[in-house]
Length: 46
Picture 1 (spheres, rainbow, N blue to C red):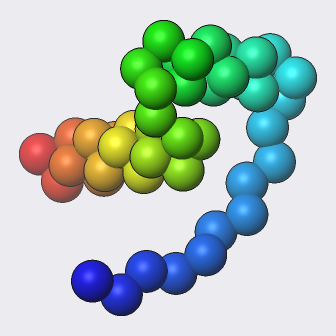
Picture 2: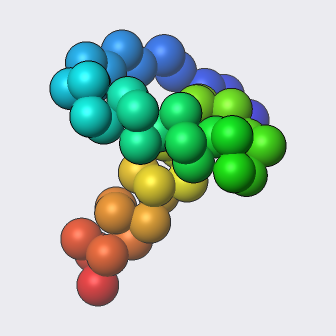
């Protein structure tokens, strides 16, 4: 699978929330953000 790179700026509160999710799930930031983006894009197409 080809992948591209995306840089995202987060507010401090978003960074804290993302870190919390990563700690709870054992996933990396990239994994969490990819999953959330995929869910959002699917919902947009619905």
